[in-house]
Image (cartoon, rainbow, N blue to C red; front, side, top):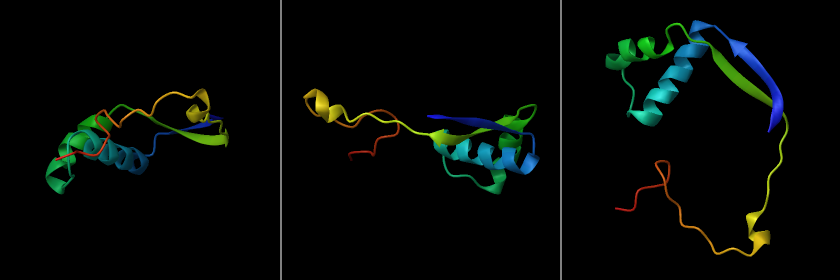
Length: 78
């Protein structure tokens, strides 16, 4: 990706980013966790990339075998 970074110190932007990170790594957010999120965003800035150019590569062109999904962001197979 190519683009320009937009720096934010707006508390509302930082809280939205903090809630998003909290939900991604800890679990569902509720008002009980407000102090934990406030601790995450204290003394921080936010940076958002405004993409001007996006490049991708189709790995199927390499003729490699399909790779199974894995990692912490893959859906659970219960």
